[in-house]
Every structure is written in C-alpha cells, then in structure tokens.
Length: 147
Image (cartoon, rainbow, N blue to C red; front, side, top):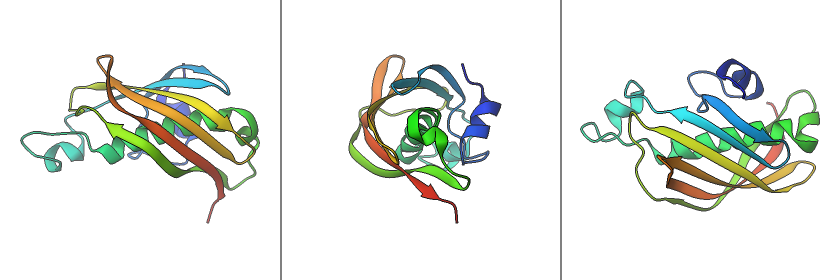
C-alpha cells in the first residue's frame, strides 16, 4: 500500500491537484489499484451542476492518469528517468463514461499496462463505484522534460 504523502512524492502534481488518495495494490510492470474519495467539500460540488453535483469527467481522466503515472514511474524504464523528466499524458483512446460519480462516492481506479517501452507507456483503465464501471478506456503516456 502507498499512502498519500508518498504518492505526493512520486507525482509531479501537488496538492490540491493530487487525485489519488491511496494505492491499494500494485504489481510492478503490470497493474495498479488505487482509490480516491470524492468529497462534497471540493470546489466542483458547488460549480459542476450545483443542485446535482457530478464529479467532472476530466477529473476522472486525471485520476486514471495519475494512477497510471505512479505505476509507470515505479516500473521499468520510467523508474530511471533523468533529473527534470516526468511522465505526461499523451493521448486518450476509446474512453467512455458509463455512470456519474457524485460526492460521497469512493472511486476505485484500476490500471493495467498494455505496452511499455523506453519512453512510452500504454494502459487500459477502469473507474468503479460500488463495483460498477463508471468509466473505462485507454491512455498513453510519454516522458517529457521539465521547462
């Protein structure tokens, strides 16, 4: 298990833009499972459909991207990135949203590496709420330099 403080040390993003609360399970080079607790106190709750709050799809994509970044960074070639390099989202393929995510939900983020090369990573992912698929698709990442 990887807790929030360690996650913050792995990711390039900083609070309040860290969208992974805890890593529950990980098999390096293969898969990762993480969670994010969706709070009614987050800014989106007041602005993204005020009387019917829905967690924005772009935030769900960021949850997947950050979870995948943790896995890819700790696995394989990406673990040997040079100073000033980090893994960035390169593309989104066949991503679908199946049901809304709302304040009070805990999302389970499951990511599996499909292909990993020296500076690239392709993953398939699902977001689940109460074991029901809320979103699924594929994302690709590449190593980029800071600045």
